[in-house]
Amino acid sequence: MNLDNIIIMKCGTHASEKIEDIFNRKKLEEINNGYICWGYGGTLCHPINQVQPFCKDYNKVYLLLTPTHSELNNDPKRAKSFSFDKCTWSNFNSKVNVYGSKYALIIKNLQKCNFEINLKDYEIAIGKSKGKNLSEYLQGRVDKACAIKNIKDKNNSKKIKIVMIAELVSPYSIFVK
Image (tube, rainbow, N blue to C red; front, side, top):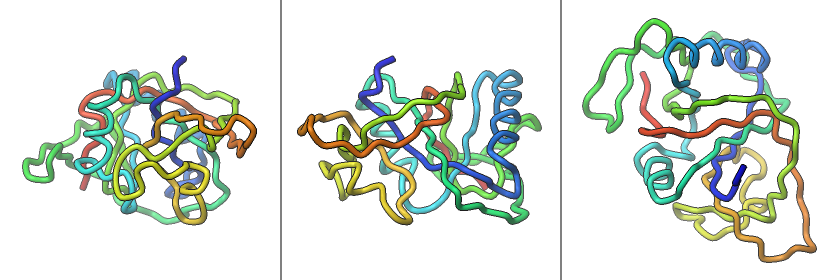
C-alpha cells in the first residue's frame, strides 16, 4: 500500500461511543451504502478549501486514524442532510449516521490496523502551512491534516501509531447538518 498521500486524523470516544463501536457501526454503513461518511469538525481539513482539492490533485489518498485519549462525551444530533458545496443540500438516507460533526470524509475499505508512520517523513500538502513538517504541525489541539510524503532527513524520527485506515473516494469530503 502506497501511503504517499494521507489525511491523518486523531480518533477516540465520540458522542459517548467508544471507537470500537464506531468502527462496527461504520462497517455496517459501508455494507449498506458502499461507502462511509466519517464525521469530523473543527477548522482544519475544510471540504472545499483543503480536502477536495488535495484529493483531486493526488492519486490515491488514504485516511490514517491515530488514537487519542481525549473523549467527547456529549449527546450530539444526527446529521440529516449533506452538501458538496454548502449551497445545495440533500437528505441522508436512514443508513448513514453522522453525529455531532460539520463535515464528513467519504471513505471505503475501512480496516483496523496496527502500524506506525514517521511524522517526520511527511509535510503539509495544502493551505497556509503547506510545506511544514507534519511532526511540527500535528501537536496540541491540531488533530488532523492533509499531508504528502517528503523524506528530508532519514535520521530523524517521530513515530505515531495508526489503528485504522481507509481510502478516500469522490467527492472526498462533504458538509453535514
